[in-house]
Length: 92
Image (cartoon, rainbow, N blue to C red):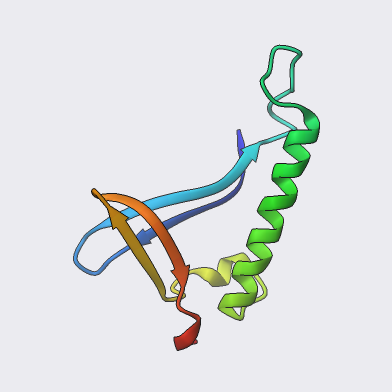
């Protein structure tokens, strides 16, 4: 029911974590009058997601999201929770 990019990061020592850039799928979830968000909000989220994906593709020097697999990243944790991550553009 969520549309977007779902990422999983794994390390050679057996750790793994994930994060997502997603919004409610317009074809699966209707915006009702009781929702705390609007179709305009969803459209804005879609725009933000696509722009972020575009940035990731440019940083990784690829032209397809499937090619993001195995691109080197740096991940930062705080109290065993993913705090941030970035593509290691300096090694590409």
